[in-house]
Length: 80
Image: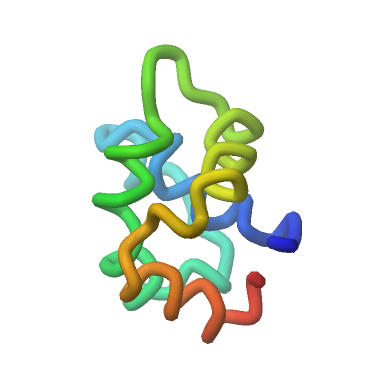
């Protein structure tokens, strides 16, 4: 289904906003991918005590609940 590379998408949501400057996103997390997915990933998959693993699994499980734009960007990035 969705490659482990999708962890890159989850890192968008798992990293606290204040730590984003210190955190270097993987190259597959393009500005377009982040813009398309961040809201959906935060809404659907970031709860209390998020971890990269938890968020990654959630994104995989809820892929079809993500917005069409996010789904398209994930596919375009080759992460599906």
